Image (cartoon, rainbow, N blue to C red; front, side):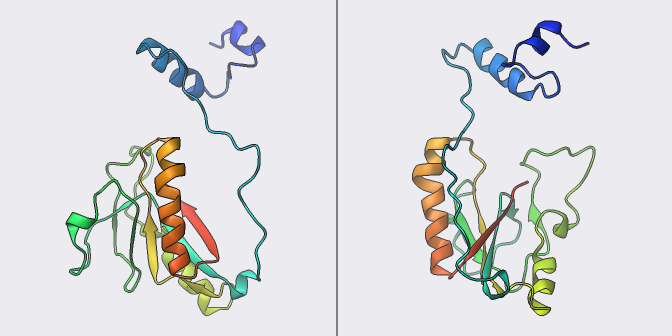
Length: 173
């Protein structure tokens, strides 16, 4: 049943209760301020400098590698850190069980459903995109705006610049 007061108050959304539930959750746990949803007054996006057919795509995921290459030192790859791993060969699977998604309604057995590397390879073959970065990138799902802005995003940008990436394709899980 929809609460009439919630419908009349624009601070509440009757069709999506996640925002209200998050605010109530933080209040119930004694936080003085409700959760602050991220906003951007100015878009951080820019126009492409060249056509997509001449651009290099970098694929970013929030999933984790299952099998790391032998030359990757686990000590230098904390699970919750930004990373870059070779795409040759593409991973057969990625670890997704610790990520939040509706595990009753769907699954992640089909890699291309959430990490479209094979579709991107097909697009390179037919000339729709220029190339794919030699590595794919992972970014943690820690929900900290400060960490994202001050640490994760700059690290990811640096990795992608090192690989000559023109277009970032984020496919979060």
